[in-house]
Image (tube, rainbow, N blue to C red; front, top):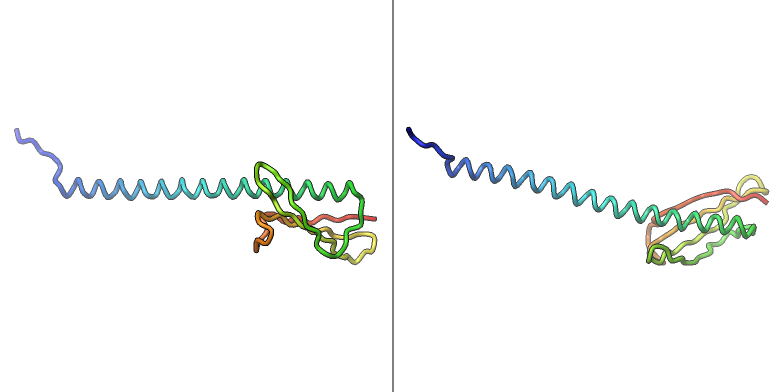
Length: 119
C-alpha cells in the first residue's frame, strides 16, 4: 500500500487561495467599519441640524440673509453649524438653510437641511 500526500505545489496553491480569500474578507470588514463611522457622523450631524432648526422655530425670529454661525457639543465632539435665510417668491415664507461641519472651515458639510419659515 502506497501512501500518497500532497505535493509542495498543491500546498502552495492552497495557501494562495486562502490568502486571497482572507484579504477579501479583511477588505470587506474594513469597508463596513468605515461605513459605520461615516453613518454615525452623519446621524449626529443631522441631530445637531435638527436641534438648530427647532431652536429657530422656537425663537420665532425672521432669519436674515447672512450666515449665522455657532457650535454645539454632542457625543463628545464639537459640531460647527451655520444657517441663513433665503428669499422665496412668497414674501410670507423664507427658506432656512442649515449646514453642520466637523471643523469651522471644513470644505463640505456633514449634513445640510432646508426648511421653510412663515411670518
